[in-house]
Length: 428
Ligand code: HEM
Image 1: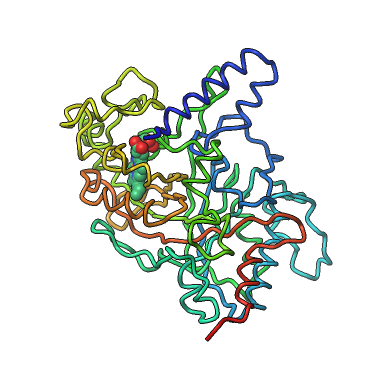
Image 2 (image 1 turned 90 degrees about the vertical axis):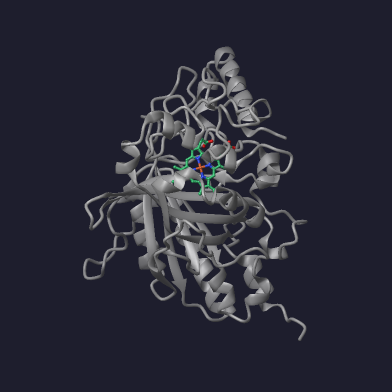
């Protein structure tokens, strides 16, 4: 089967070669990081812009900046006109916020046009706002029900879950990512203020990715999660368009409603980590639970290799080197069938404070994208059910959502094809 780590390593090697040959290539290497590369120290600028217009929304295969959040809303709209008005308003705000610009000055007798968090000019700071829809938006509206993406369901409980109803599901989510926390909060407050009659905030979870110094060739290692392991090493290569078309994006022949072409399924899980317990667990046990070296990220059967080299389970059938129940081996057994279950992970670490029992409330805001939710997240999570890592993690929230196709031009808007389909007369 195709091994994502290999193609990614090849690309990095290729980029390294380019750097040596061409003085401008270093910026090429840095301009094209992989989704889960740690953001590079001193490389983010408040003027960073991630293009908003395109056939697909930003924030899925685009590199992860240092901050991210998922905010989930109930939607008020109960007919196609109201839904269109919501999508148009969202499009307008996201187009402005991701491009940046001066904040309008209003009469001081009125509330200011902007929260002011970013000063008189709202600079984009690498902002992306990715809009996705939950099953309830369709289920609760008979005129939208027939248009629900085929595999979009309300997330149900897995055996290790302790789901808090206040942190689950929603009609519409915004995944907001930027170089700074201020830019994500500024965007959220702008949208809440701009669309008060249509969106009611239900829950949100913020997270961050540790920033690292670049290696000598300008590239980055995978960021570490709060268990101290590199997270993202074996992620499919987000720069490989053909691979993303297969793994992440819904295509015209995928059996989904026509309006959904160019979208993707988003699975969100708020997974608490019992970090105090983990920090008292022997290093060897931690590594056997994960299936990789903690410091380098190398697979356990190739300890001197880089994190981007995949394990070879064919040479270790009994799991002597990489235990059969290790996280990476269960998540991706790398056999003929598991190639169909690839997902693109784009997580953030979260740190929320202290629980009532005096423990750190930390964990992973796990977000992944796939063209088929059943073959992707749900199949992988079923294989992980009962894994030894469960002693240290507890999913408490999240949901399944469908990322709308992108907005191609300034005259287009989010959800245009969905609203048009909802207006079409239907038989019966
Ligand atoms: C707090 C919870 C989790 C932690 C701490 C965690 C951590 C890790 C780490 C350290 C790796 C190895 C490096 C890498 O390839 O990224 C990994 C790999 C992976 N994880 Fe997780 N993970 C968590 C939850 C999940 C969940 C919920 C899923 C999906 C249901 C998942 C799917 C995967 C997959 C597919 C791989 C790549 C395996 C491979 O191809 O070798 N993980 N995870």
